[in-house]
Image (cartoon, rainbow, N blue to C red):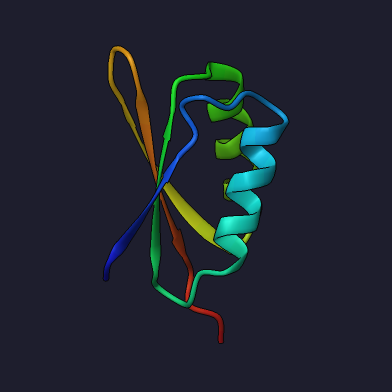
Length: 76
């Protein structure tokens, strides 16, 4: 599946979480969104949100920027 990029490096919470939620709401089943962020609070909030919703999240932590790979789970 194609990974759609969302650059939130200039955003902070709560705006980063809001933008991530809006973009993920448009995903189709098994589609992935790549989120870039530098704000640790935003990253933690996004991880918490996506772990409680119909998404799976994988986090790649790097020194300056973290990447979240959010995939919409297939609904039955």
